[in-house]
Length: 450
Image 1 (cartoon, rainbow, N blue to C red):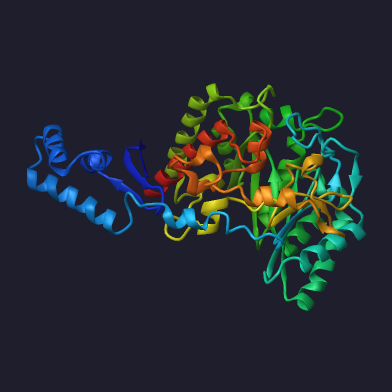
Image 2: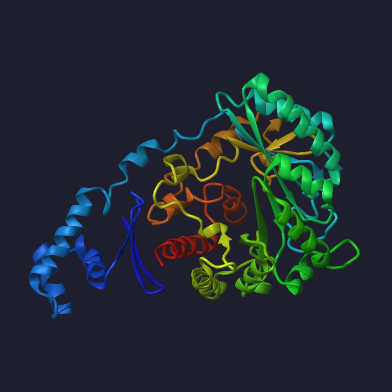
């Protein structure tokens, strides 16, 4: 299977199964499009009619080059090797990462929040230290031979339970040598409670810090308000700038959300870059189709236009002090993704789990609070193996809608939670989300070749 498209003055051909990307001229582009459907003599005649200025020998040379690429496994590659691996790559019972819901409460009342102000449709709560320690023990004891383990402190707003976060980091560090493991801690925060201590501690202990900012002040403040109804932009932006300025190790990125209310979201991305915040992500809102903020199919043309504009803006700024990175345009075309990622996307429900303040286990943060997807707890482990097995089976080859999709090995079948919330099944798809993902991949590839 191949995918062809034109963007930013480039002709791009993607070979789905090998991952090979070719940037070609118009002649090769048209020849590849018809190569599998016409005999070589008929294709030569067709190309000669379309390109009368090009000699037949040169046309034949193009077809020979296409044949060589096919023989080398870089065009029209069969998918048999990946099909045979599907269903074998997710490791049941071996956990590598936990999302710690240390606070099911929040100091903001974001209008689009899927977690309903951090409560996840339940009670407000903070994770006790004892539960957190047990969760770390569960991860250490159920990680098999994996040496590098990941823990994300999440909420709600995790800084509302900051003392426990620090204690859990210390406890985790104290166990590393005994188990031969290494923790990679991360923190996701809205920034309201960031201070000098938080900045210094996260710089020392957190491999990544995710900072929530939606862009322009009028956009951010419309959604991300305090309980008293005030916008949070003026509070958090100086804190984010200072944290970024003082960060000397690990990573950070700014995580924004766009909705139907700001479909011109590139303005928000550029605004954040001009604030000196250079590691950026902007995600579409997560919500049911009847949500007034949710992205709809009719919004896609405008969204596609925005993603293309972002390519041009990033290319223009490249190599200057105004340059920035965009999470969804970060691709390694030389070495990745690995076969595991190409087939399954994320490891929710198998390698990755979310832990509530009470120690209950769910496949990921987007399933928390849904009793159907309660998987057990940090004392007894995974007892609902039906859910684990259901999610282990979520590969690109178990999703019928992915069968003919050129981007399937870039996304691994997409997000199971989004599929569930949109289609009612973790084996389904979020059709609108799929279209946005494919557009981002097209843009990401073109950005690398500009």
